[in-house]
Image 1 (cartoon, helix red, strand yellow):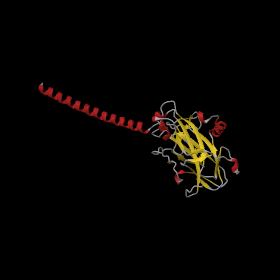
Image 2: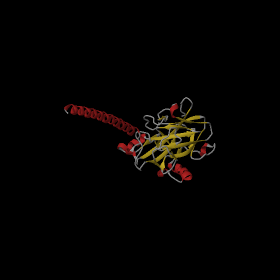
Image 3: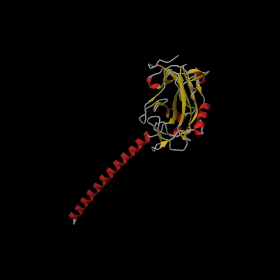
Image 4: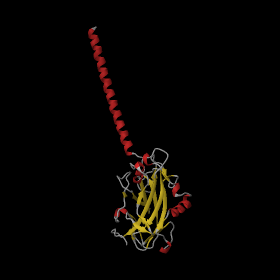
Length: 272
């Protein structure tokens, strides 16, 4: 009777050890899942609530190249009919004629893109420009009195009596101010686009981006203009959902976007 009791105890002990091993394996697997979820949470930003960053103001200004002009419409080859500055009212006029909307109506819903041309939501659904919560898109015509490469400039200069530069700024404070690092602007010419990433950090989603500087390098080159040949460029502004700063902290932020264009030769020498 005693031998049988010992045998039973030994069997129960073996069962207990097997159960402990199963629990250990399940616990290890659970820890792996938790670690993976933490990693995913850390790398995917995307807003989760219903309010989004809004574009407060957009100014497009030109300097450093007296030979360079722009307009919402193609004004032909007479440069006296073109402009050096585009105002919000001019862009609003374009948006109203195309979409029946205005800059103030546009709220930047996080989207993502690899090429600055086609955009998707976090779930992979295609997104359309100038919806109430999407990305902003408009077209600008450029012309130059000489052959040149057009660049975005980080210089601060006077254009028609006002300071002009290329910058994305905000009056927000604290964590909401991080919105300036989540914004992107692309310039499409003939099916390819250069992507400006203000306050550039680590590239995301396979994007090739640049930030502005005080001189014109090949990385800030947007497109080429032939002498007195108008060219239309598509400009898109969006909140990059895969940027680490594009999270709930920056929702309902306001932005000011300025773009200062200049011209240079193939070696990056600017036209004075």
